[in-house]
Image 1: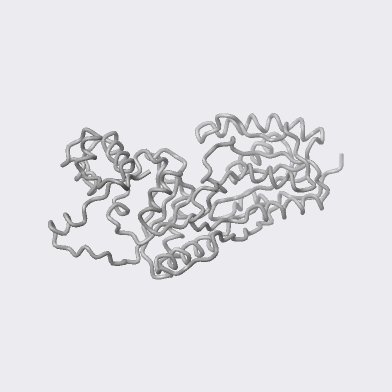
Image 2: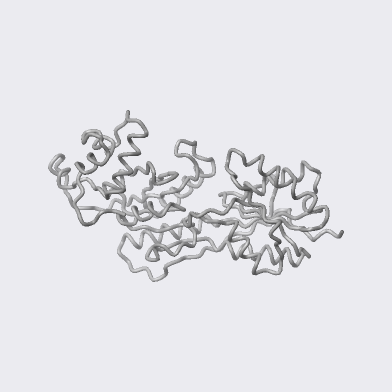
Length: 356
């Protein structure tokens, strides 16, 4: 939480970090050549204390007017889910480019910021109040708090946490899409399903799609037994393939015995792995088992053609950008959450339940 009772100065940051004022100033202004540990220490204390550079001091140095003028620059802040040193995933890069294009059509300039956690969160553009507003996607509580105190903020594709009720959210109505596919599966004779996804986690601002799927199944005529919810403990990008092999090995006897005829996957990465492993093991899709999935990627998969619920990224981003524009313009926003209907990709992996 930022300190609002005291005027925090760069001297306070220096005392807290044990780093010189000159070094802190250079880091804030984009200087290079410092260790990552030093940079993270400085930025963490800046967030903790709520420090902001003195605009009056900067005016005295460079003669610029202290008046804040809008410049049509907005920022999209994304929790990458990976180490900050990792390469940007191809689909994330595609999403960034798509967002930039949609914003430019509305006369806006954009900047994208990827981060993994508050530790090391570095954002001079926010600190200097250069951006007019921000769209944040699945970030941590502390980051939302920090950003929302500085600029108009819209949350996009986030979880259902009750925190920050004053912030406007633009979300996908994924439950509707899942429910529709489950209804289609039921009409095709499927009565029992298995679910494959990530372990449960406590980050309320990231969409926990697996929990959403389980909840929707509970409200549908399709049944899910506890033993058929596959959420491997310790699952991460490094061990994903091995964990999925183990899941499929556990599934095969159940499929052959008719314990379930439908597999519901949390996202494309899971459905692709399950599909490939089942086919490698000689299981025919959809003749022996049907597969449906959520797919948060920009484009559907045309290799495996998994029947999927796709996020309508175009409508999602356009709505978030338009809402943020209205906030920046000072317009009153009555609706607190905008729900965007997903798109159904028919695919070829959902068919009539096989006869035993």
